[in-house]
Length: 280
Image (cartoon, rainbow, N blue to C red; front, top):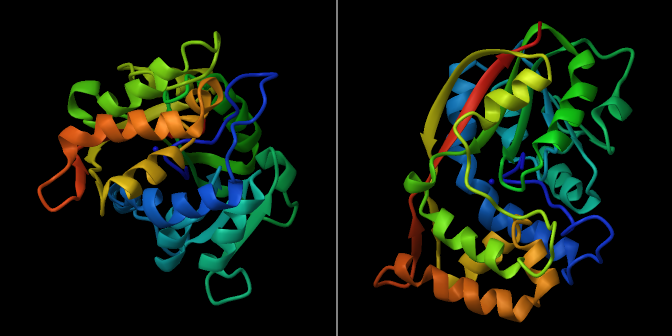
């Protein structure tokens, strides 16, 4: 799903950006969608005993919810993201001049945020959903730039969708893939594969050290909120580029119908998987 559910991408190299308002979408992400991964963040923090003494580097930290949770436990956190509209929201939450030990850096690569006076990180999180946009190679490049900043033995956390049969949202995300078909080569959603996370860790030279699954249901107040939240993930960018925002909204609304409750709310059970790896 960020720090984020997924990182926002253009539909494919050389294409025009979808017609979206980046500030509005960042706000939709922060207010609607980001909280869906709260169980994942809490589980990882508990398992790794995040607290005072933890030095956390959040890659593509988005609007900073995972960082806020860690900082509230006493961790020193640094978030790196290239999107100014997301970082603006993270700053509202974390207030780098406030009592929390938080640092936010706008940069394309974590290496650009390196500081000779900063001690090595003991935890690196990459909550971009591996497999969502079949962009694990891009995540590998980001990890390669981040690992020199981490201490030996530091934990690196990767996250991805669970099995499609246990993720109700998979049926909705297939709409994104179908609508994007006219754009050959467009990066769009695909079902998770069993060893996606391990493959990224292996290519980065990391040593797997445990994994787990977490229930992360997607719940929305109504269909409009569900559409806004899902579009804010970036998984529908290619679909918007291939058709238009109105068409995507229409088909997305129809695909959400089976998950509407009598009171109008939308509820989709999902399972996410995480991998803990270690820096050699």
